[in-house]
Length: 403
Image 1 (tube, rainbow, N blue to C red):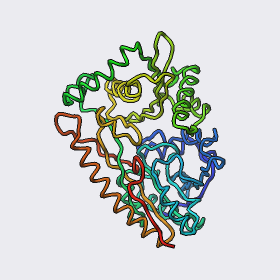
Image 2: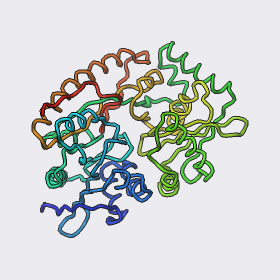
Image 3: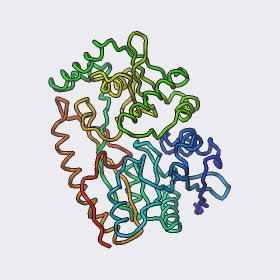
Image 4: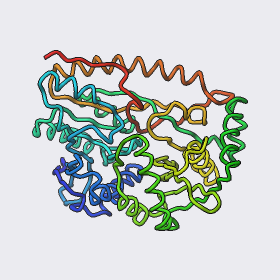
């Protein structure tokens, strides 16, 4: 095949949605990579130059002009909204007198979910996109290039191009042929089964009942209530939300049945909400919030209700998002994840490599401990993540870089 022509674009408006989504569907159909989702992030200003996310998407075209490959890239002015923590790297590099930002990032903003980054099925085009990303990093003279949550085969491709791989942990639930929530409980140890039943009883005894809406059935007042809850979660952590109300409204209007909203009500008044996104055979837990801090309400809204919904609708997997060893007791098992990293300065690259070697040992030890604490009666094998991410917590070792 003739080598494709690869260009850099700064807006998805330059690509037809049908052409972009054809690439996404060929690569597995991950909804977070869809034209509607990414374009909504850009057009509503959530991921924009003003917020430190400047699109530098690579698009590959055949001689006929047909779009045949793409890579979502951003020029980043900070490390917020990534869920792969490199703050210590930035601090070390800046202490040594360098500028860590801007950097290049291949990722879906604010979304620690697995999925391809190289949107092409032809290996030659995929390699050409990798080479183009590295060439762009050098041309822009950025400190580094980072690829977050790539599939395992894609991670190997980036590694072959000289990037360093990083490991981390997420927690995923897998449907082992359950037909109802009680089947899941029956597969768990007595202590964990008892704990979940207590969690659910606390919420039910408090008078909370659940209403589930999907896609077009999510009303405008539902979105408004959800956004209020979402803001409250960030406020409780003394932070500001990344996403805006217009973004969520666009997701509801433009993404079919992808959005699934769980609303907890008491005496016909909503008190909490959690939002999940369904894509393929997987449901992704994304955001939640509440107006009342009831005991165990978080677990019911974010895990038990979505998992019960997955079972009822035949979904194979529920991904609980980044961080949270507490998810293990709720039936979500640890899964190793990956990211890939290239740095321009050789001294810095050596320091990062040493950091990652120490971190891998820590991740392996953590996985061993978590596996020994499985909530199930017999060992269950979690789905091998075709895509991955980074660490789900604070960086496990300090990094120093001598000037």
